[in-house]
Amino acid sequence: MIRSRFASLFLVFVLLGSFACLTQVHAGTLVQEGSTLKPADSAAVSEMKEQPGGEKFNPGEMIMEHVVDNHEWHIATIGHFDLCIPLPVLLICNGQIHAFWSAKFHNETHSYLGFTLSKEGANKGKIVTIQEEMTGKGPKVYDFSITKTVLAIFISSFFLILIFVSVANRYRKEPNQAPHGLQNMLEPLILFIRDDVAKSSIGEKRYEKYLPYLLTIFFFIFFNNILGIVPIFPGGANVTGNIAVTGVMAFFTLVITTVSGNRHYWIDIINTPGVPWWLKIPIPLMPIVEIIGIITKPFVLMVRLFANMTAGHIIILGFISIIFIFGQISAALGIGVGIPTLLFMIFMDLLELLVAFIQAYVFTLLSALYFGLATVEPHHSS
Amino acid sequence: MELVNPGIGLIVWMTLAFLAILYILGKYAWKPILKALKERESTIHEALNSAEKAKEEMLKLKFSNEELLQEAKNERDAILATARKIKESIIEESKQKASEEANRIIVAAKESIQNEKMNAMTDLKNQLADLSLDVAKKILKRELSDPKKQEEYAKELIKDVKFN
Image (tube, rainbow over all chains, first blue to last red; front, side, top):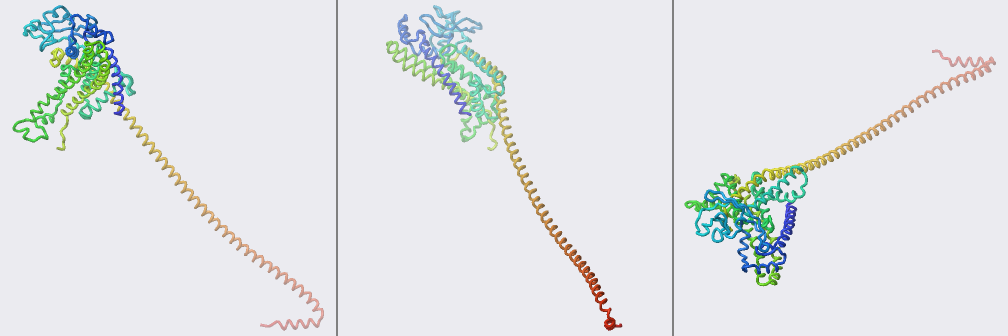
């Protein structure tokens, strides 16, 4: 039964992989700002060379622009026209609420209502007052903008709800029937989370309480990971590679673990069993380590998912950059390097698909393990 | 925006969005899905169980059928055995009766033969007596025609008569 479940999972991967690869390869030429929509690499490179000002291609900057959050959703630059989706900017500064479209920043001064996008320093890319940008000091700006990541979260949440509510309706309408269609694709995953993650980590008795949370984080992470690999709108946003997103989910895991921790859990933290007494008295070394562990466990969850997804995006973007770096030297070199690089990119995309699943699985599994640790019953034998 | 320096806005929006999908999916997706999965599993489990039970019952039925058959066979054998016994005893009895009857008939036949014989003997004796008498009469008639001889005979008779 488990074998067939894995077989169907594998099939899902292969299908998604082929789809993602096609779109990635097709879009590989248009992700770079300053490139063209023309499919041939050489054309993109030669156009870039002719750009006024002789703008030098900066791979580091380009990659960072793609993996971090942004106030607009940039899709492509065609000639001198930026094709991007403007997003609403919501600011609270000095007790005043300011709301406008991010497109307002596209002017001579790159500023609007006294706000500007910081170009340098620690706040790079964030909205600050002009005063702060110039002098380094100024009123604090609280930015509640619907950024690219926020919009991507909304879109993926909308799709998740649409998909799973429709699947749930199928279950409601046809109870005790064999699953089919979308339901058949998702059921192995749901059963996998239920049986192999929740049931085995938390235990037969208490797993049901945590199952909705575990299923939600698994599918949220998995769906956003997959969507992040797809380079065209509404994909391509690095949602799960954003530390705020992973941080919020890790925080939820921390809260649930702490709230559901039973007496046994706290006793084990304060009086850790199985270690020599001199690690606890007079200096409570183990208790301190355990208490730090309460925080480090979700912290590690946060960093692992963030780092894995961001690294994957950086690697793929790095491969794309190679084409342009060599293309700047000569067009022929760009084409020559572009072909093997494309093969590497396909390979990396497939690897990222695997990582997308593994990271969602690991986050869910570790969350389940922490819940299981927090709720485990003491052994009556000892 | 920096990689590890998230804005407050994103955290707030992510929290709100996450809570929203957690609630909506929890209520409208996971609950019915998990319930349906559980129900289906229990239905399948029950179906399998009842199939197993039916199988067992079939086995039992088969077993009891066999038992019944065996019993019937035993009974038949028993009936046959008693029938054979009865047959034998009937034959034995009738043989005995027949031989008894035969004996009786033989005895009766012997008796009647004896009787017949006796009768025949008596008849024979009577006829013989009659014949003797006739002979004697005829002889006497001839003998007594001669007075000398009459006297002789009378004398002889007197001689035979003894006075007691």
